[in-house]
Amino acid sequence: MNSKSIIKGRGAQSHVHNRFFELSHEMRDDFLEYCLKEGDTPEKLKTQYLEVFPKTIVNKVTSPDVGMMYSMNPYQGCEHGCVYCYARNSHEYWGFNAGLEFENRILIKRNAPLLLEQHLKKKSWKAQTIVLSGNTDCYQPAERKFQITRQCLEVFLKYKHPVAIITKNALVLRDLDLIKLLAEDNLIKICLSITSLSETTRRHLEPRTASTLKRLKTVRTLSENGIPVSVMLAPIIPAINSHEILPLAKAISEAGALSFGHTIVRLNGAVGAIFSDWIRKTMPDKADKVLHQIEDCHGGNLNDSRFKTRMRGEGKIAEQINMIVKLARQKYFNNKVKSKLNVELHEHYKDGQLKLF
Image 1 (cartoon, rainbow, N blue to C red):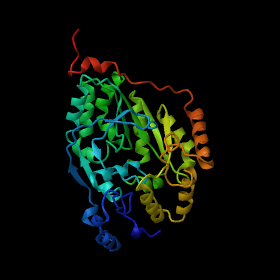
Image 2 (cartoon, helix red, strand yellow):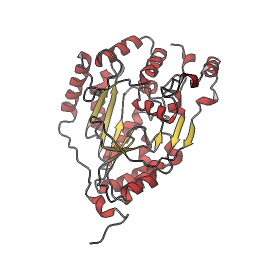
Image 3 (spheres, one colour):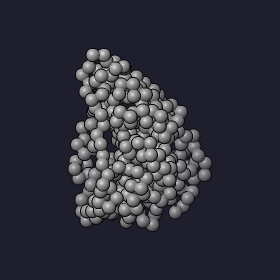
Image 4 (tube, rainbow, N blue to C red):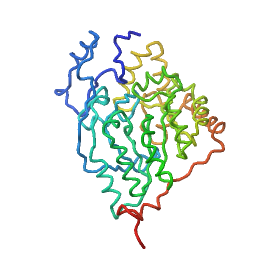
């Protein structure tokens, strides 16, 4: 591995073509490539925060196999830089590419709390759990500066509305005061994403996320404070972290997680090229093996978009992974009970205070 050819601190190692752009508008990377060869960091690699003004913030999720009906994302793009992230493709709709620009062009929705409040006050809205981070992480580094996620939690608390959070970042503990208040009325649950117990693997796959140790401590802290917490062991990547399923399940169970979910990696859209480029630069000795085993899970392709099979895969390798996951649940989560969030309380708080009868 030639370390000089790797962009440190980033997942994607290059810009990729935006499929919505005509070839005549294709961006050139000549200067970027020159700077990297010279060992410098070009200005275009620095993270830029760009304010956008959406008209709505709560999205209805139509996919039948993602486990949520409504989601919201205070930020688009994600500086965490997870190289496998399915959300990379969504950046193309904003006119950016799914590679480096997904990581260093972060769109900021400052009006998200206001839009959320307007949504929750609608007479037609019947409370259902809204998931923060259905697409990109609501506790990514930008949240330290803009605090949009915290403001949204204040809205959920004001209107006694159920919310779920998915994150890779220990920054969620900053808002423990609000989270504990929401938990008093059974209005919140949190899911930490933990992909590997190996810091080397974590740094390669997810260069700007919280360390595995910090995430396990976050699970423990939330659990000790009575917050329902689960973990996503996702994605499981053959020959990279597939051997860690049982030790991961044991570690998160001991930390207090009530349950865990998993997916087998699928490299949809532009992510296939981004991941392939990344692994040939960071793990050249095992690149072919990993890519071939991913293909084995998806009928010979790096991606499978079919509902019901895309998350779990098919074939011998996928079967082995899913069997180990089943064993891990039986071994470490057999007596743990999950609870549903309270969707009844919100109706009495639609005007921001308890209605009088």
